[in-house]
Length: 596
Image (cartoon, rainbow, N blue to C red; front, side, top):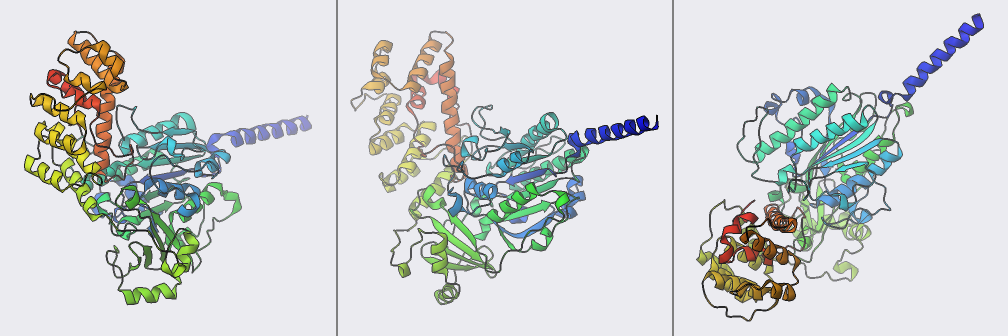
């Protein structure tokens, strides 16, 4: 009988251990939350403003738990290049991603998401919008990749607070008590002049300060939600900026600290002992942060302390920025390496900046001092070892023409100014005419396309005619003549024949016009005129026109940092132009031309 009781006791204890070991709430691998914030500058770090913390009790309570790294540098102003370094633990020359757009992380490289999934952690990536999209390749390894783009209420982004709410719902419904790796991407600060509200649903004054406040409030709320679920203590929590405000980007030195010096704060699980705090004053690259995150994911408490090797004294931080080339302002890619307080940048020559004396690196050192440092650190050889395409006369390789097109930069800044001029305001014809006379058509297609759009939006038909004549875009001139009640001065065929025909022959139109968007619009308008319900394809085309215009406006507002559609052709499409024919005035409101 005693043996039976002993066996029964052993069985019950074993069953208890089995139930505990299978419980998702007893996972010994701490979860990881990574928050990547666009346009978040170093001075915006959490807990920077004591007055702001008075309204953020949960963040205030945990401020002392964060390790703040004071010298973290993004490798580029291009979001996808930065996230690629973060997710692979590699520098730009190694992972090869330099721009925003279609080219993303290679499938041969292991990302943080893939590593976490291999470690049997639940994985989720919640993106607030472009340019961090599924197609970019960052979704590798994530079970849940949730993004805001095109299909979701015709929006290009969703606020960080909403993105976070969806992530919390995912934790509750899918993850429950298991270990997880969660990434939140917030592009909110790219979207300027956005109305934000406080906790009482009152609107704040518009501006960056209000938007930063909303970011901090969302993080405060996220901390509360994690505490409420008993997850905060046993979690690694990382907050990282991806670059400063867009208007702080210096085109004459796109590697400057003013933009690329970013905040980095890490809170470790309370069960993990580490030497990470001893490294907080080192210069830290995104590749280095990525390597830390890879180690955080794989570390087990049973392995003892989480120890990170300090950087070697001779370690260099590499930077590579294709912003000027991507903006078509220069054929230049800027290469740079950082050592101690110095930035060595191949930017209109090999220049040296001293962050100690010039925090934002506006002015390079004088030639004599620069030459001394270039020789002391053997910079040309270092550059060549990091960047094979680096060119310098000492290697017998002449650099290509790297001159910055300052005229084009000035005109692009004018476009941005015009785009922000305010709803209902107009440009006068003298301003238009001056721009037309000074523009070189071969070099200023972006400017002329934008002028055509401005003329169309403001119904300045004479200006549209002049721009159309200069660019030889007969669609613009024909539309202008129609609104000026003038006979067409150009031969028109194909789709454009339908613009000028007094009697609209649909059979002839379908025979000669193969533009699918215009065909949908023409058919839809004809159905509306016949007081019939147009097909769904018509409404889809109306949405496409509106979305494209909003995307291009967003690109301008963000100086093309945000990649939505390339190339940047601001010219109105045939479908847009058709709505502006005098006979279609009653239907013009459908495309909401001035919607921002």
